Picture 1 (cartoon, helix red, strand yellow):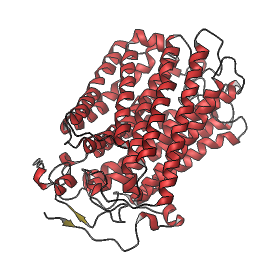
Picture 2 (tube, helix red, strand yellow; picture 1 turned 180 degrees about the vertical axis):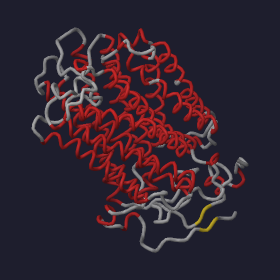
Picture 3 (spheres, one colour; picture 1 turned 120 degrees about the vertical axis):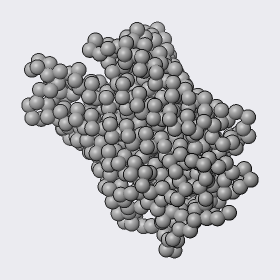
Picture 4 (cartoon, helix red, strand yellow; picture 1 turned 135 degrees about the vertical axis):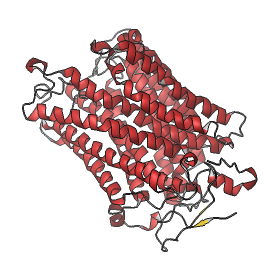
Amino acid sequence: MTTTTVTAPAPGTSLVRHGVIAWLSSTDHKHIGILYMCTSIFYFLVAGLLAMTIRAQLIQPNMTLLGPHQYAEIFTLHGTAMIFLSIVPFALGLANFLIPLQIGAPDMAFPRLNAFAYWIFFFGGLTIFSGVLVNGGAAATGWTAFAPLSDIRISTGGGQDLWIVGLLMTSVSGILTAVNFITTTFLYRAPGMTMWRLPVFTWEMIATSLMILLAFPSLAAVLALLFIDRNFGGQFFDAGAGGNPVLYKHLFWFFGHHEVYIMILPYFGVITEIIPVFSRKPLFGYTGLVLSAFAIAGLSMGVWAHHMFTTGAVANLFFSGVSFLIAVPTGIKFFNWIGTMWKGSIILTTPMLFAVGFMLNFLIGGITGVMIASPPLDFHAEDTYFLIAHMHYVLGGGSLFAIFGAIYFWFPKIFGVQLSERLGKWCFGLLFIGFNTTFFVMHILGMMGMPRRIYTYPALQGWGELNFIATVGSWIMAAGVFVFIWDVVSASLARKGVADDPWGGNSLEWWTTSPPPEQNFTSLPPIRSERPVFDAKHPELARRTGK
């Protein structure tokens, strides 16, 4: 077996040897990736505390723990933190860490731009939450900030403007990062790493980056127009002055539905990396998985208006048809994951449990998504708790479970220590039970007609009991998160060493040390398929693709 030699880094340059100042000023993609992920986990915890407050208010009818404006502020910041500051940034951080390692590169194409993008995101998050300190309080129009609700005459105060500015900053950060990912992947691949040998996670991030470049300018445009309306006398969305509030919905949802896939495609990649390793089989349908990612990215350009069926301003038949069609490439992924596990020697480690949990939860979210892609059903479910359940099964049961799977899978590689399998399985069990207890009953609440965005509700038959069940489920989820935090802290304090490849991985990040050195590699194995590390360690089973 031959290897490609790479210049070795200077001694003492591993991740754990850097001081605080070196970390904060670093342009190393691994440092920036860790900063992204740690920041996003912090906002996940903040969003979780806000969610617990929401559930406490809704535990029974006619509660007065929160007033209507306080409740609106809390659910706005909860949604904003989860969508803009947690789920997407974690994916960007994980990709920052992994992409150069998976393609055999020493760093990102534009290291300084990479650091700049992170700090814009960091200060954008602070700007959003700084609204709680100003007169009038934080933003209180929901994470969508629909006009005319977000008009200055209704939502006064500087918090809404700070929310707009903060989101503009995070949008710029995402665009810069997407450019960096695409450039790095196309230009910095190691010898032998052809495009058709890229790990699927890297492919999913290319598709995600293309969607970011298409969608985020639309978000930036609508936020800029809204800021002008609020502060400089613009009338873009004021129907009384000749503006058009439906224009806001078009611009926002052209971003917003892309954003759904931006939040899920990276985690499709995570699951695709985990399942073959713990099924002890090659990935089934590599080409289909790659092409399905780009099919989703392409079809996503034609589904934004399925959020607007009830406006009467869009062609419901067309957008319903495209919404049904986009389920096909997602179904291809499911069949390929199942095909990978079929007759495999499955090992139910914590990452694999989270991968299977992701599949079960996302399947429910996908089925309800197909349901509300039908306009007659959507008319009934619009603005009810059925949509809350659907969205959380896609992004909570989907993306968040994949995040936990990614942490347990790559934590040894990132930090050189391994999390506890026993505590990890407790974490999974509590999160899985708590999540389904919380959100499954919301389907029933939605079918019973409970509207979303209300801070209290009357004592109608069944509403109080189901909301109580949902709140108990949120407590179980909180216990699971506490177990996770305990696991991370205890493993970090124990500092037990771990092998460079504790799982028997496939892609190049498992070839280097744990954690990786500054320049990532001292040598590279021959790259003859999409799983070069497996090929190098098991030459008798190596699969040559010839691509």
